[in-house]
Amino acid sequence: MDLTPGRQRLVFVVIVIALVGLTSYLIENRHSGGTPAAGPSPSASTPQSSVSTSAGTQANGAPPSSVPAATPVPTASGAEIYQWLPFTAADLSGAAQTTLTFAKDYSTWSYTESATNYVAKMAGLVTSQELATLTSGYSTAGVAGPRVTDKQVSTGSGTIDSIRSFGTNPVSITFVVTINQQVTSTQPATTAPPQQYAVTVVSSGGTWQVNDLELSQLGNT
Image (cartoon, rainbow, N blue to C red; front, side, top):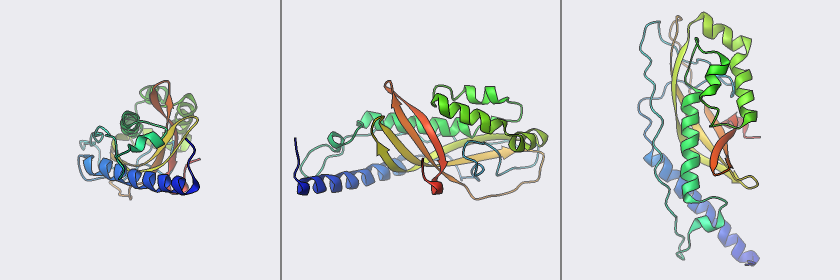
């Protein structure tokens, strides 16, 4: 059905309002599982420690946040917002769950793991292109060297802060995510502020896969 310019503007406003509500709903229902530690390094596809404790300390990573089931959001007229979006309520919940699982696996690693073993747990969560990027980042000499030398072990988790954007062809959703880590190593403890990431997931064959990972302040390309 063709909409007049006035009705198109009204629909756009309704979508924006509903997305704000959805974002607040996700944030209010997440369970971070503890006080956030420092996030991973600025290299988005290169896991490395930004917080460490003395060797022998137990690393207690928080579990991924639970994702509440998304429900249709009615507008003032009683229509459901999802009729104007390229995804359903179930899609949104699935995309969020994939994002949180990825955040946990991305930030959980050990100096004893090879790049192959590290990325294997994410094989079903990310696209083949992103898998290659993660493999390369984990193997980078400047990151892999200190990881092994300092015997670094990381346990991580993530929380979704907001929805940044969505797209079509393919259908995609970009979440702003904070990834928390607990890292042990042989080095003295250091503290750094956590980092936020923009994680883009795309719909593929009825499932969602991570297609891109960027520092949130850099945007998503």
